[in-house]
Amino acid sequence: MRVAIVHERFTELGGSERVVEELHRIWPDAPVFTPIADPAAVPPGMAGAELRLSPLQRLYRGGRQYAHLLPLLPRAMAGFDLSGFDVVVTSHHAFANRVRPPAGVPVLSYTHTPARWIWSSRMRRGERGGMIGRAALAAFAATQRAPDRAAAGRVAGILANSKTVAGRIEQWWGQPSDVVHPPVDVSWYTPDPNIPREEFFLSVGRLVAYKRPAVAVSAARRAGAAIVVVGEGRERAAVERAAGRDAELLGYVDNEALRDLYRRCRALVFTGEEDFGIVPLEAQACGAPVIALAAGGALETVIDGVTGTWYSDDRDGIALAEALRRFDPADFDPLVIRRHAEKYAPDRFRDEVRKRLSTLVDAPRP
Image (cartoon, rainbow, N blue to C red; front, top):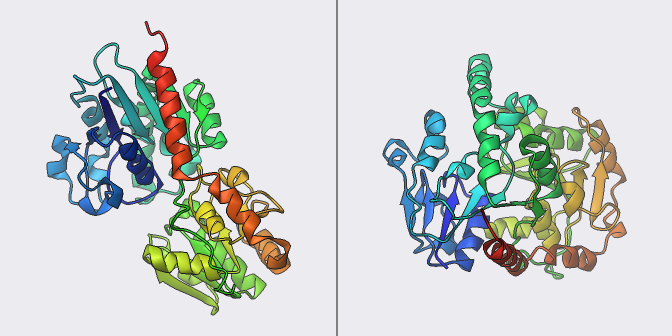
């Protein structure tokens, strides 16, 4: 079976790129179509993969700076030549579903989320660019809702990465979907019983508004607790202003250093409402409990009272500060936490995707 993989863009290495890495492992000979790519953002497991880029690559300056190309990305997706393939698998969170394969070629969409900036004004408020930039983004989003919904209606099957995303797919696209959780590297992120837990809490993720890293450090300051922050982003200045003297901002760290922090921290603090969220499962794979906002993917990945604890939504960190004060690591069993994370291993993801693609290909189509 000749498979084509389509991904949004390789501009930073995150959870969606790890999904494409696993798709490549299922179909190592499948070319990966993507409008733009920075070699530094291509996962190591895709070394040797055939990347087919769009003409927009000539206008791309590398890194995360691609906003000037945003209005051109839908057309770039639709312009890919997908003739000669039996099936197309998309990794979608904005425009990947806009592809136009020949008639009779089914598309299976692995949907990280329908683009929240297209459908949610609350999400757009967290974007940079000031009032003018947000107004321009809102105007562009208004033009994209109808084609986004239409593209979802053309695909033959949709896999949602969480129940939260499945709900958005139903609400915004009016389409059913099956939930297949993304893979977590549980072979790398492992506990080490020889490393003792320390007193600091840990926050991991890009320093952007919707992840609310400033809430984490503000709550730690209120609770009189030490916190280590891993990540960089445009909210760094806000995090520094909110941080107390017991907060340490490390910026980016490599995978080995991150694993060490997961193994040593008192608990991971997870303040954002994520589509799914790989970070809490990486921490749990290392035996660390998680203190998470009771929203989004954390409602599926963190078992309250077993692998961590939820706290109620708050903007000023008061509820989180109280959760930090009450937290007792003796209430949690690292082995139970680890076993929970193992359910999200990559081989499970690959098996589920294979099974659903086989069902899709064998189903009768008009």
